[in-house]
Length: 391
Image 1 (cartoon, helix red, strand yellow):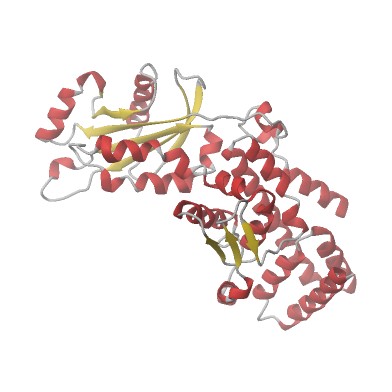
Image 2 (image 1 turned 180 degrees about the horizontal axis):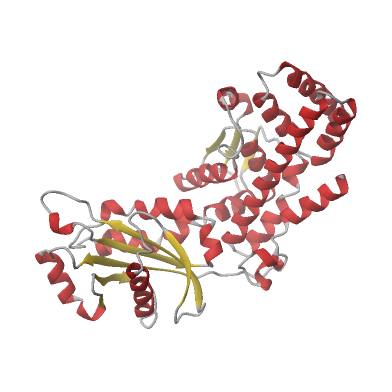
């Protein structure tokens, strides 16, 4: 039984070639070769021809007639792009087909694979239609908007960052105007940073902490507050986003008691993980880890060395999945242990072998706080784990 659990754990660390869109060289994982991933963007003005066109939009389309694709129901005008000149019309044609089929809905990101005249040939493409604000003063703008395209990596890779991409593109909404007078000063710099801001944050954190990344993983699982001192705002924001990405909050069953426990742990300043970035490498205080988190360190470092943020995110998702599986197994064992001493013995063996007993029991106590029999079982397991640690 426990041999199969160990095998399953190793499989969760290794990214399966059959399930990934990364090529075989990319997921081999242990080469020192850097895998540089190019990124691109494009932004278009979408105008529904079913609504009356305003003077400004007509003038804009006329000025950019060579970069406008017109269909029966709409026109699509290029505003800016970082793609090679031969690839941009291909992307515009692809988007026009998607719009014609009604596949792009306002405010909802759509991710697919597109083939363009770029070195990668096939690339992941995130597209989102940002509809123009509706107002009584501009009824002709109803249905018009901007199509934002972000390209890089693979379709599967971009899907791993869908939440971050949605949030980043929505952050562009306040900068967009019909005249686009701020194209060079605001819009273009913002779009140029999409890959660094939406995809690379996990890579930056792993590069910063290196072998200490296990302490951050443990902090995320155990709801500990992480404090970054001596670092710039980007480092602090990256760390917060890493913790959020690695946390199981929202993915496991929670109640008000669990939330209270998480809050109490976070408010205990003596347990806060402190990362001091004023030294190189950063120094950590109140660091705690376990075998489960330590076993994942090398997988993160291997992916970081290859400069592949998509592979890093997949490893992080596998880490969370394995932790959830172990939590579910523990809860099942606890239910069985209420009626069987043998099940209690199996529960002890499981906690001993999984390497994540402290975190699992912490969450189990919170979830079973209203069940006296279960709490009694958890107390016995905590004593067993404490004795094993001391031994």
